[in-house]
Length: 411
Image 1 (cartoon, rainbow, N blue to C red):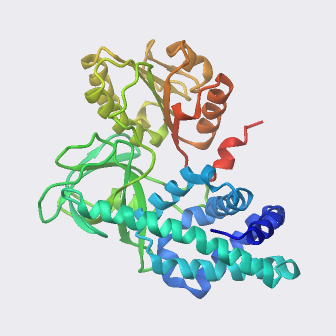
Image 2 (cartoon, rainbow, N blue to C red):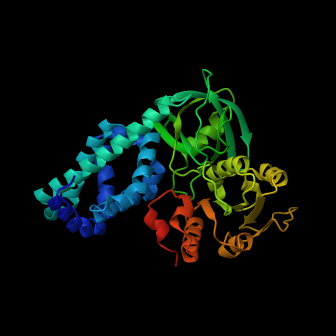
Image 3 (cartoon, one colour):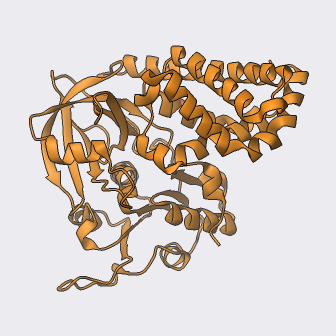
């Protein structure tokens, strides 16, 4: 347990760290990549470029400091971090590297405010958190290895099929290169692809599994990331998969991970509402297919927002599911007007996925909500559910970035 003195020091420095949070984490990453370049492949350069990784770490540090005397409230955050670390094969030997650079960065950024007493206190709490994460990650690795068809680390998979889903999305069907069974996974989870990076080192990316579990393949559906701006780097791994990986090729895969998933063993009478924006459909579609198979009497509402039909994946598959399952209601909403020759009907229209649409499909409001998509989409839905008073236990989401950005309502 942490001493009262340590807790007091950390809480007293929390406001200072919050003030300097992003400057601290930017300095930390720069320092660590300079002193320990071997850990750079564990991090996404696009997230480094955009600053989202620095903001996420700053938010995590501040949340940890603010709740150091009530860590139970951070249980969900710890599980998210542990699952992400396990997906990237973070091991116990990596923690001293991070700790050394983090403590040095606190001293270098805060200057005189980082007394020996402050540094020692933060060293103690970092070690305390590291032990929690190391323990949970070791448990995840053990579970992955012990699972039927499971394995440790990275394993070669062969691309058995490659299918174009839209103008920008390609599905890859993956089977073990040496044969054998596949482990099960929870609908909504992801796997990690490891590929050779542009500078000769390996790089890793997480991709949601876009089909239901218990298949004889893993399916990932990858959007080609071109970079939203001229000075934004395009997605190296996504473009590599689209352009260079053909049927018969092998790629390295780490076992399924993730704390965002549908527990199919839970039984509820209230509706299940699945909301997806853009490529956020990939984990949601896995959840949909699993729910239809395991919950045949439950009302399920599925909404997908896209720019237009040309970039929308799985449309034909979704239409087939809607005709097959009477408990499923689908709605497609497009933010751009229909292209020439395309007509939209009552089940698909133009606009944004907003509260009016959700309420028209789920007038009772009391439902279990799962959603994933771009930040504006996520922020609007999250705050609307808060305003409706939906309990946290009924709100589930996959958000790529600091949760504080989700909680900060758009003006």
